[in-house]
Image 1: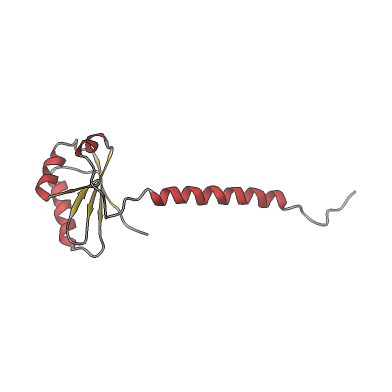
Image 2: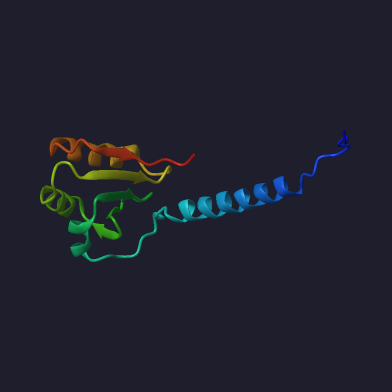
Length: 122
């Protein structure tokens, strides 16, 4: 009977390196999917085709609907055209006044939107 003095770990290391490469690549794509608060303008036609609606509030109180800067009264008009089951994500700059967030949240609740998420940084 032949004794084994060592274990060949080269195949194990190869598999671990491949798995590490997959994890790093995937995490990079996930991180780049976040929309920054300084958003470029987008056309309003895109809103009707989205399944997920983003509302961003900048430090100075500017409101963005997806990538389009919008006034509060116009936001109300656009939201009233959407189905009540639309998923909405709210992002707010950590240095902005909390009242901006509360105002938007009250508006959404008054319009009976229930699928609301608050996006935070880990």
